[in-house]
Amino acid sequence: MGLDVVAYGTAVLTEPHPNVEACADRDHIVAYHLGFEQSFRGLLWERCYECPGEGFYFGVGFSGHAKFIQLIARAALNVDPRDVYADPDSFRDKPFFELIYFADTEGCIGPLAAADLAADFAHGLDGGVRAGLDDDYQSLYDDWSRAFELARGGGLVYFS
Image (tube, rainbow, N blue to C red; front, top):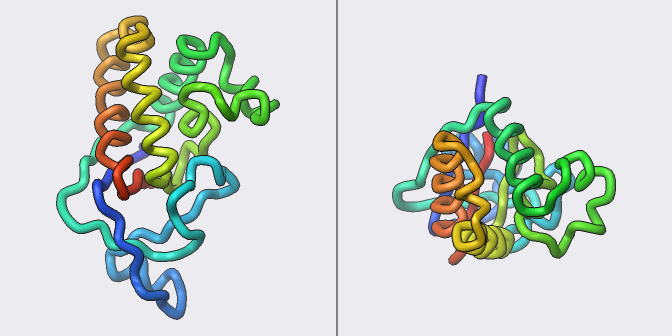
């Protein structure tokens, strides 16, 4: 069992449907945030989006994602992710916040949060965060970076 991530460069708001289940059956993405509003910025709650064009897909796996988040939190913030969860207000303006303080199972990251994360990943590349990871996690760092770069201009990143 794993975590799948897909990023789209364009997310177009569809007309509202009578219920979100009907919309999901049409291969639309139903946008929701599970309480992580800061990562949802740029999307509308429980509204449906069509994402034309190819998406960028990568599988993370739950344990791989948890380990990656732990490595990023340590490298960028010198804290454990649990510290971020315990006191999110102290970390809101810190790098990688929208990814560290986010659901690890499902939800959407909107284009405004994706823009912040794309900048964080670019800065982490220059600032040595990526270099401090082993090869497998450097590859995952590159996947996340690509996903947020793609979504930042009006798309989304969808966890399922």
